Amino acid sequence: MNHLVLMALSATLMTWLLTALGAATVAFFKSPNPKLLNLMMGFAAGVMIAASFWSLLQPAIERAEISSSLPSYLVVTTGFLCGALFMWGSDQVVTLARQRAGNSKGAPNERLNRVMMLVLSITLHNIPEGLAVGVAFGALQNGYTTESLMGAVTVAVGIGLQNFPEGAAVSLPLRREGYSRKKSFWIGQSSGMVEPVAGVIGALLVVYIEAILPFALAFAAGAMILVAVHELIPECQSEQKTQPYFATMGIIAGFAVMMLLDVMLG
Image 1 (tube, rainbow, N blue to C red):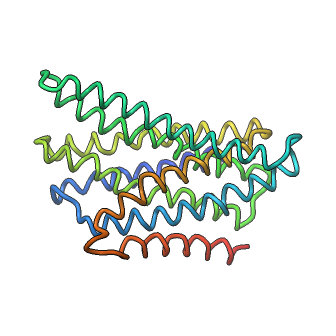
Image 2 (image 1 turned 120 degrees about the vertical axis):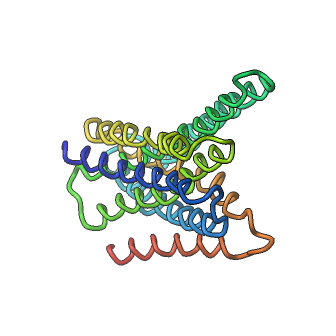
């Protein structure tokens, strides 16, 4: 079973690496290419929405029907809503912290507050993303096919793709505020450090407490859907007036790629 935890760790180290690569863009320019970032975020949103069903919800329903003493629809719906609520709660904590930081405007530590809130907002929502990857790999404990392995990999790839602009979203504003490129990079990449930890925890929970697997898979799906719908899709449409369908085509392409992989391997 330990090899699944190591696989989850490796996958979340990859998502962390992509966060670091995004943060490293600060070495080349002070502001990102909005068109490229919108396309990447749209593609990641499409991948995450598709992966939420084929790689998480569908297996959760199948496993709940086999192993759960409760109705499968109850287990999966509860897990899905809990995942979304967890993300919502994380966002509320960040919002409250930002409001308190805003109330200290003019204080000597105002700049530090702005920096910490920016990093905290990205870091907090990386927790369920890391859990999603860990759960996806932990779900392979009963033996895995090429399809199930590819499903877990695509969950990691989808999250990793949207981590790239997140890394840039932290480091580039810091650079614009006068921080050195080196310091902006290190703070930016640190926002992804929580994902390997959360990934290992998610994999361990699923591997050693098999009964929670259907709930955990649905939980990860709820977290991913909320991130995609609440954050990625609105953000990638920021240039909608000048490029009405550019980011939308990214969403469609991401969904289609994920769907194609699942159908081909199914």
